[in-house]
Amino acid sequence: MINRVPHILFLYWVIKIAATTLGETGADMFSMTFNLGYGTTIVIFTVTFLLFLIIKMVLKRYEPITYWLTFTASAIVGTAISDYIDRTLALGYLIGSLILIALLLIILSFWYIKERSLSVENITTSSAEVFYWMAFLVANTLGTAAGDFLSDDLGLGFMASALLITGLLIITVLLHYYTKISSILLFWIAFVLTRPFGATFGDLLTKPIEKGGLDLGTIGASIFFLGILIIALIKEVKIEKAKL
Image (tube, rainbow, N blue to C red; front, top):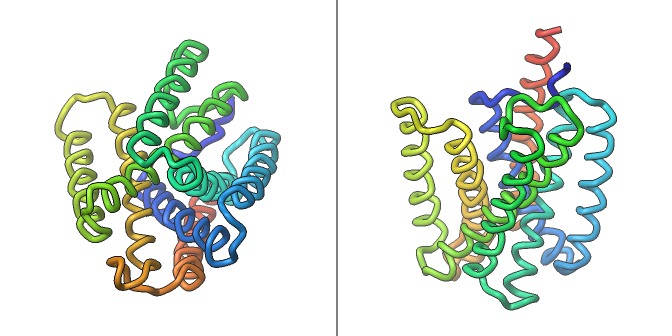
């Protein structure tokens, strides 16, 4: 049976961080810079995400461009949903994070019950892939809420939050290589952590100087990370072609 998802190698994390950071700056660009609002942004990119996901599932194999277009759309949706929960529903990032943690655990539980596995490197059935993308969408949203909770609610600021998350990611990598802790558990920890890393770094670039940012703007930052994403994707496509 053909695997539908990429292996988790170094390049995966490079593309993932670029895509999640683009998700942060892109969502802010559409919702605030272009003044579409969170609700409209959520609708547009939820539809985009579902369209890419349908194409992805019809292919029934791993194809880098389609996969990462689907992922990036989920990252933009996740950012917009997180901001909607906090600012429109006024639940706050802490409550939003707790709700999303509970939702992620529920999805993972049903995934395991149905598939008897939570492998993120070996997805060969449609049902497993649906759970895979549902979990990714919620985890992307959770990562944004967690990052904003650190930088805004706890008052750490964007730079300190990014440094803290970087330290946690380094610890996670060390645990992967030097302990026998479940690699699947460590993957989900790293997956969630790389999201607020990207989100806080994106905010650092785009937010005004008086709010602790560099005031580079959402459009410029989005173009920058889109460029990184494209370069990394070209490398990934070449690797996949070499396997054929």
